[in-house]
Length: 311
Image (cartoon, rainbow, N blue to C red; front, side, top):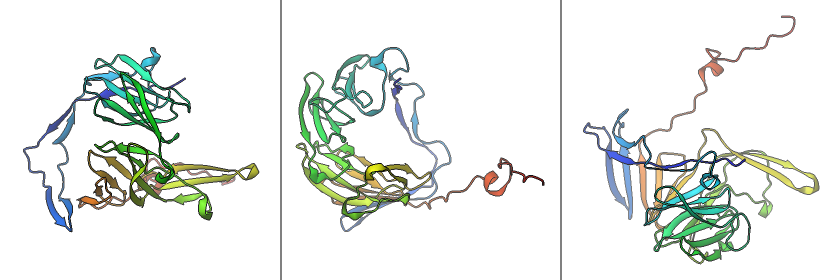
C-alpha cells in the first residue's frame, strides 16, 4: 500500500543569546561581489533558532482517509487565505487543504495527458494564488489556480538541457532547473562502474519554458555507479550517493540562487542574470571521516574473527 507522510507546520521562534558567542563577521566588497566571512567558535549549546514542540497545523495520516494520506510530497506553500497547497507526487496530484487541515480539492492525476503529472513539484506561487508546478519527467510547467484548475501548461525548451530537475522559483516566476544526477552516453562517454563526480548544470526557464539564463556547470555530488550490460546492448545503471561524501546543495530565494559544492564552508549567490553577487564563508576546516574505533582497531564492538578449522 501507499505510504503516507505527515506534514507539520511548526512555530519557529528566533532567540538571541545575551552571551558573547565568540563569532566575528566581516563584510567586504571585492570587485562588486559582497564577501561575508565568519570566524570564531559558536556557542556549544543554546541561542539560535528554537522550534516549538507543538505544531500549529498537521496534515496527513498513516491510515484511514485516503485524501489525508500523503506520498512523496514535493513542495508545499501557504496561500493568502491560509490554505495549504502541496504536490503529492505519489498520486500525481496537486492538493489543497484548508487552514484547518481539511481536504479542499485536488488537481491532476498520474498520466501524460493535459492536466496530468508524473512527478509534480510545487516550486512557488505567483500573484493571485496561482501555483507554479514543474514536472521534470514530462518537462512541463503548469499554472494552477485553486478556484479555476489548470490555467496553462508549457513545455520546457530543449535548450535547458537534460534532467529538468526543478529547484525553485524567483520572484518574477522564472524557474531554476538542474542540479540533479543526469548521465548521457552522447559524445562517446563510456559508462563504467565506480566512483563518479560529474559536473552538473543549472539553467533558468522563463514563464514560457524558454531558456533565460545559463548559470554554467558546477561540481556535482559524489556517487558510486553500478553499470551492467544487458541483452540487446541495453545498459542498466544505478547511482548511489557516497556516505559522508561531497553533496552539492542549492536553494532559490526571491532574487538569488544559492549554491554550495560541499568542498568547503562556502555558499555562492547569483542573481537571475547569472552574475555572482555574494559569497558566504565560515572559517572552519572540514572534519575528516573517522572509522568506528571498534571495527578499525579491534576494540570494543569489533566483529569477532573467524577461527580456522583445526586451530
